Length: 248
Length: 248
DNA sequence: CGCGATTTGTGCACGCCTTCACAAGCGCCT
DNA sequence: AGGCGCTTGTGAAGGCGTGCACAAATCGCG
Image (cartoon, rainbow over all chains, first blue to last red):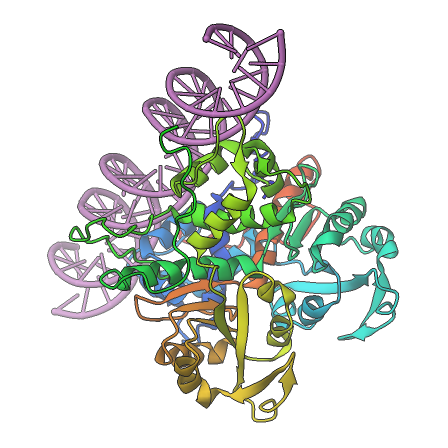
């Protein structure tokens, strides 16, 4: 990621509700709390940190600290007001305004993302689809027409698109990122397996599906090597093959 | 995640190459290094930590420390042997054996995942597709026939599937997870926006596309509130509305 | 053969994050 | 009105991860 904390220049007086600079770890959990809150079918007005933490799958102390960071007021002995908490978190995350998102690359994955209901239901509005393949331009997906990528910068500016999603092959990703930046996009969600270089003011988050599987694979390997300890190395290639320069 | 480190019971003697218990942060980066290594079109035999770090988008000191954790031997003054390093990382990640993966839920997203080339090209083999919808059972996707989810436990055992991918709606995810566990699956990649509860020996990784966007949204909100400081709160709702219990 | 350039491996310090444990505060019941 | 139980908010400690800076090691060249 290209976080590069702006440093909170000493000059900024806290007159306006100078944005609470929450820890990154907290920010990453806020959406989870929000989801848990929305999923509450329980009609109760309030919820305790214990209950919400369980619903979100985290430690209750962590949750309380997270919420305290954003100044949210629970009531001791009672809990948090559900409706108020939802409003608070949505405000902090900037979800009260439906943000315009564009998606580049309507291949296999992009097609699925374009139709993903989870975006619309959680505060985002896909307003444009792009692709470099002329054969795909003009295709209609989910009520949107795929446009050629050359139109990206112009349309991004025009539609005030702040977030771009890259679902192209890795080879095209950097070019697309440049086009997004040219269009004034300042947040990028990158599904292409590659490193993007962007200006410091642009945030990039990466999701690499294969990497997730590889991490799981590691744990599988570890678990297997633990349970197989007594036996004699049954599975594939041993870690050897790197002896050299043993004694010089 | 349900990490819950096994505690490394004091009894385990390090006779067998007791698995290097790498820091989680390191594990998460190894696949990135691997990808960077594979992408090297440079025909050189070796690569310096500096160069590889740049290609992977990380700090070079971090990379060296990561590699040192897995005992990988670079050569001072020269760098790391590319081929050897690839072999090492692939071994640690357990990628030398093509792991069997099954995918549950062939809706919008599942469909895309089933066709995602990145899995096959990076050591994984999707061997089965499942869905609960009878209308989808029998459909052929990418050479695989969609089976009914009731067959999951049996087939998972039969095919020795260790990793399962959940791409169902949130409502069905827990049921699917239970079925996966019943089938002996010990690693789950969950795309459904919900918390799964699984036995301690099962690893779960979660990918929530909407959450990623929400995190970006936060940064957008923050950036906007910073640049708009001088002006007068032009955009949406202020954070107020939570006064109450001010003085009792 | 020796020296300098280069690059790895790592000790150390710092900061972030997590977790525990508890005081403070609030509501309810008597 | 008072006390009791429950829950939040937070101080402090510990662990983890990061990044700097440098010693150790290796290669190539004169």
